[in-house]
Image 1 (cartoon, rainbow, N blue to C red):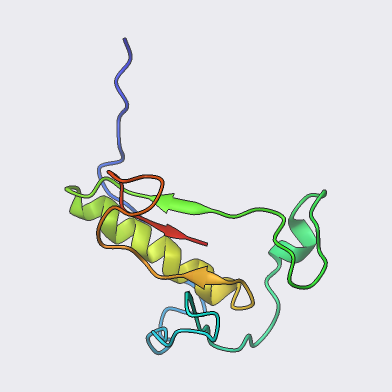
Image 2: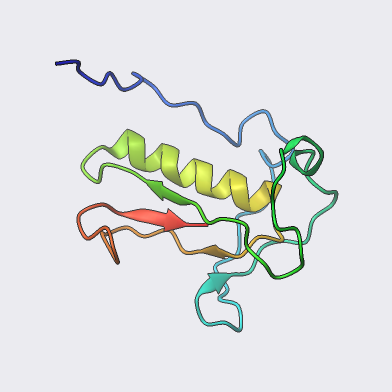
Length: 116
């Protein structure tokens, strides 16, 4: 049986990016009542040119959704998950992003997460 080895430290995903000194992300809820407002983009992420097809790129259509999970008792994992959630909101402000859950919810009742 193999043992999963977690990194001893998690990198800060905002450090070294244009977002490092940006103001805090807003906590304002959009009109859909669930997702969060993001700051307007200064430029489009390079991932749009580097991300492989097939994606449904029609406006308002989600080709996929992403859940960021972390092990609740592990504070470093939680900090890393929040950092990833923040980085995604800065890099892709046009995405519909939901709040960062501090407690387990939904289909994963034992694991807190963020839905992107």
